[in-house]
Length: 323
Image (tube, rainbow, N blue to C red; front, side):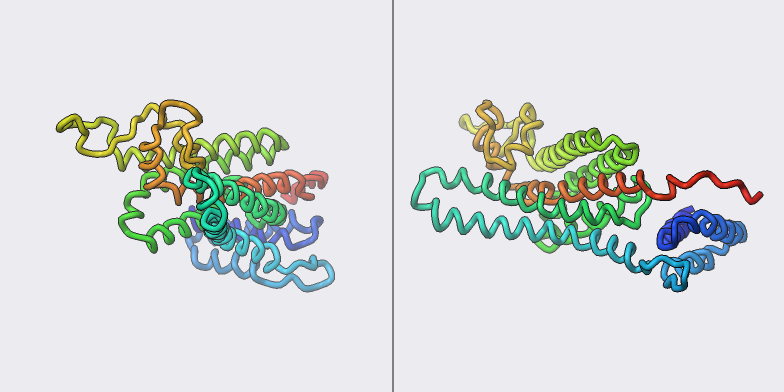
């Protein structure tokens, strides 16, 4: 089943390179051949057949001008390089934040420590919006078809990049962050799937609202899972009036992602300054990465969904069956 779906994806990418008036006939012919190979359980031959069509250059008077390397190459470049761009945004924002704090705020104001996270967050968010504008353009020319394929195409490279970064930083840090990362990757994939599906139905505004709210919930869920895995809620045994280990009260869990980005509890009694310190100490890098990645992921899937809705194939009159 997986082999058949992969072959169909390659055939769809190959058909998109041909003129609109030829695509339906080509798809029918190719899928008929694919059905024969699948029936005979010739999986390797099936993949080779689909890959040869996807990689073959469509020369000739009836062929489109775009080679297959155009849409497939652009899609691969966008999906593989965008996570690295998000990581670069986080690093650049951290460097600029350190320069601003160290050169201007450190000796000028007494609240310079409270300014670090808001500055890092603001610069990351600003650069992430710039990356999202490029991602929207890439999404309009995506070779991926279908909301789920588009969402998975976005999140698989993201998962590889984040896990690689966590592993490079420390194995202990990767183990600590694993519950949150798995929750974020899974939930955000579902959110992107839903946003792409809404955009494909023409409900673009609903897609953005669903995506933004869902992505915020996904990031908060990831932070909550990481913190809960790291700190207990009950202080346990108290000796001489002091708890024997650090705790974080769960009552403020919905605010943890915002507290991580702003270093602030918004005037509420929870989380306390010490709890905010504990939370940011274990999850601040991941939280800022979530902020850098989410805008471009949403922009890409929504743009791809809108483009699929206006695909020229949909405007063609129905053809009579050759059967």
